[in-house]
Image 1 (spheres, rainbow, N blue to C red):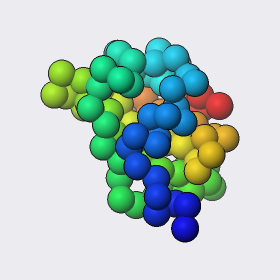
Image 2: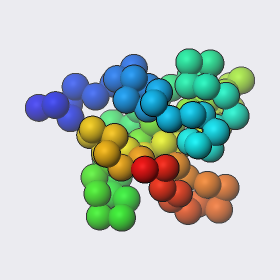
Image 3: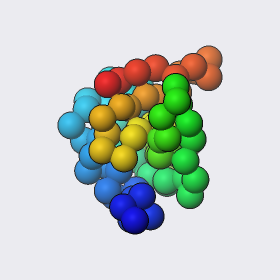
Image 4: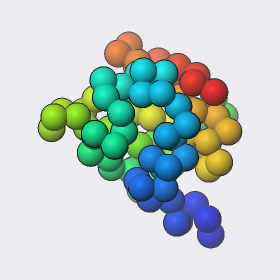
Length: 85
């Protein structure tokens, strides 16, 4: 299935249409290390992939997105999902 094919690189490709600031990140995705969770997380009733973003060796953000990036969220410092799209 398509969901099994999702990789950190594929996620970065989907998410590069968003500015890093809109994703709540300190730097562009191509300057960060990316790790995709092996499971999905349900965000507001939608199954989402979670992309963990590391910058300078520190976790800088968690981006949650649906298969086609039709819905994109990031987790803010209070543990709330913030809609990017």
